[in-house]
Length: 373
Image (tube, rainbow, N blue to C red; front, side):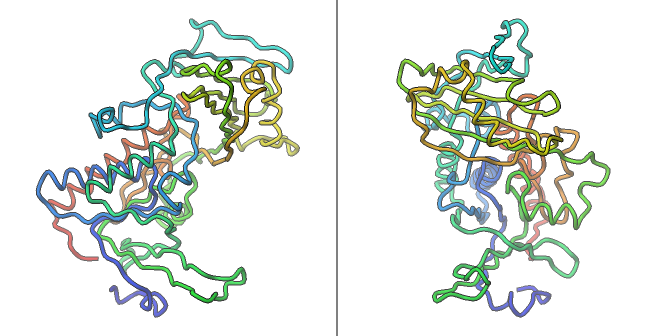
């Protein structure tokens, strides 16, 4: 254990590994899977731990989602044969311009290329993550579900050497409950942060290492999503609808989406840029208004809402991506701002960022032979 750690830290249980990944989303699991597969193919031992705050991988995941499969094709070429939960191809794209009463359906010839989804799939990202986690565990990756990383550990040279997981069993005032369990120190040669947009540890790293120097400020939106179960005559599997205009005013950035999955499910949502100037604007209320529009209501008026949630979205684009490599740690996925906002897609870029991180770490592991913490 490092001599610079405090007495409180020294009393904790310690686990050591080669690579630690914080976050079991598409970026983190892709990094873990590629690392382990390549190590296995090379006949080398590589211990990998993935931390996820959810009770199980996928339980904290929220996304539309329409997925470009190109990165998954590269990571797992036979994903269809392995039973990946990717079943519904996009069959039709619609782009609607809404007013408070009317709807203009843009002709197909006027739909921008970045809104075209031929070859893409409508997926449940939560189910995809559960499947990816299974693939990773089968390859030998250790996934610690239910553990959140709350503190970054550094050595005397400010190199990142791991994280501390959160304590379990405290009262609201911070005092210990009966059965209190102290957080665990997980020490790693290399640490990958894949927390998603606005991750708490990533914000610390950005500030500490000035990772945003020379970058335009990142911008964020809030995405609100509901999952509906509808009668079969209201379901059109493969239909992808995006909306612009109402209920947002012309000063507010954002738009709606409606994705028809299989099994009579519809994912309905609204994205609102958080730079809106109207102090009375409520993204939640705008979402409720969107559902009242005739062009949207006709798909759900006899349905039942079976799930809902919201999440932050970083929509700054590639020019705002952070420099990902620093002092034996990396930021990947939405932690690094890889979402392609113009295409409304981030799953494939997250997966690819994880694969690139894996390549970088493998090169370091096998050329430098780093073995110290």
